[in-house]
Image (cartoon, rainbow, N blue to C red; front, side):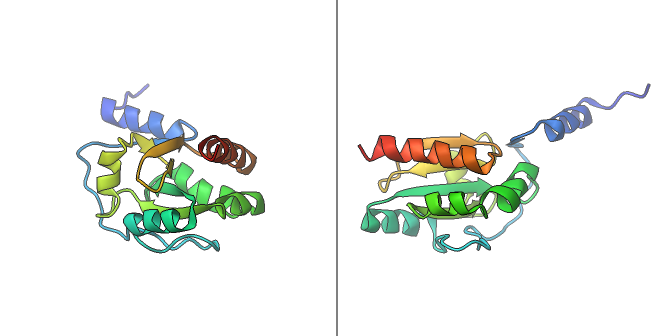
Length: 156
């Protein structure tokens, strides 16, 4: 049997793990749009700071989807979870932002919130304080339940 070099074996293991992609330190990063336009209604189109301002003005929390173009679980969220009507209804209770973590807009958020894998979904108070974190692919019902728990805890 032929053995793979450690780096290839590690990469194969990471790709086989369901739910999340690890952050590669020192990797080259492509410049992309900071806030991607989702095909789903209701996603905020501005910057992170503008999203926090909108959250403050509307007395909502911000939901921040941090993703990368190479992350399989990120793509599954986009295809399976975010289009779900129950997820859309729950996300309407937040200011929802989608940010490419490897873009110039996303890189400072990676450092600020110590992002270690993708997808990472943050729930952030209007002052920028993290109040919830969800990592990895989640089925629609699971994501709705987690978001409801965070929102309910924070609005008491």
